Image 1 (cartoon, rainbow, N blue to C red):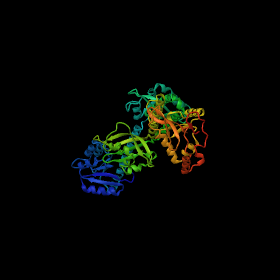
Image 2: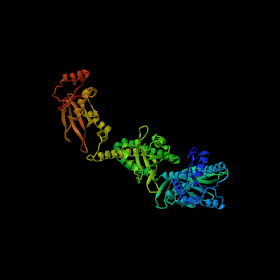
Image 3: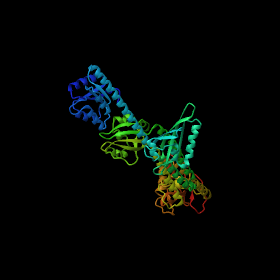
Image 4: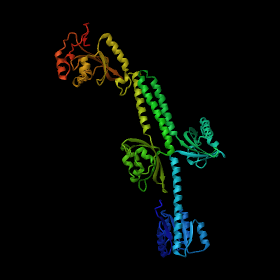
Length: 602
């Protein structure tokens, strides 16, 4: 409550005239609003609503006296400040009131102005103290919950007494019951994994001896309850006296097991992929790129770890508290939401249903259970739309808040940005799948090659060298194209094809049609001779891998030895397409000597 909010009190007295006078005096004093009742039973009902900062009650009343009312509200659990304001002057009344939990005793009589001024002063002091205590308990509660949500434990070590004090969250991390931490520093060391214990002790000793006031170390612990091995990161700060001697050490311990196990799993997958890469010597360059990508992911993972430590120190994950009963509203949202999603906490406070407009449409159904108070068993990963339109994956861990009836009335949670991990996982899966299919296509040509293209299966430079040698020996133009008619490699093509037919859009469409449609439906191991749409002959045989027709092997273009080319057809074609007539004539180049084989254009 801010200082501008008036203190609200309840004034109880069976004399209604005094109630009116008391309300006027107290409200004129400033900063106080007064409700009144002449019935102690009605007063009890009103007090238990919890809306009052202090109670002022007469002592002697017909239904029950002021001390009886005090006892009843204390037994009901209310700690609201209580002032006995009575005309009875006996000392035993004051003693009884204070012994039963009254916070102040004031006797009626004398100057009303001075008397009510004193009463107003007492109300302000007690109400202020009540608010301060409530704020302190609230802040402590939020601190404990924040540490629990972020899995952060805290310890303090006194070198003089060798005593260590642990927070409840640290006890939970180590598998110990809250309130029962180890008694000595040796007990703390005993929980560290034997293989890491010397390194932890050495780091602590070195930082103490060389004057460093801060240190950070990652190590493993063994939980006391289950024997499970967990990974933690610890930050330690040393406090020294004037001589430089360490008099107190304070540490924060963060459980990073999930992140560490994910890293180990990535490393395991890396080793599996690396083993596959070693078997693919024929495609070494492409697989080297995949390996570099994996190395890059490891670097990004290390950078993510560094960011994660900084986030843990300053609680930069999204931390929120949202009520769902009696109606949905955001009670708290930390500033990290602005960095992650671009929106401010005020955007959430202003509209309880704001999240429904920025969650990815495909994930909207996953948060519908919140309105019904359904408690998720594990983390919930959702996609959110940033203010700039980008998509962010956030992993949510929430804990329910129950009311006295056992209903879920609110959720407290932490949201962590896991977008990079999601994207890297998808890239690794795609890379592994393509690498596996490529390996299978080489080791077992009859196997399933998935969506691999011909260019991804054959070694283009090696096959190009073979075709070049073949053309040098027999002077026959050869090419290999994929199923879409795209020429992958070739040797000895005529300029009429390379400079004209495959340059102009109309004649190029004829080339593609010839390479695909006219060469379709040829059985494996057979060949076909056909005249292309541009007027020359080709010979083609299909390339079959894994039962799929992935491309064609072409020989051409040529004319048969006893065939006289119709040069006017090519000149007309040149005029229509804007070619140089002299350069497109099939007679423009020399022909091979007649050897009984089909003769071809060079």
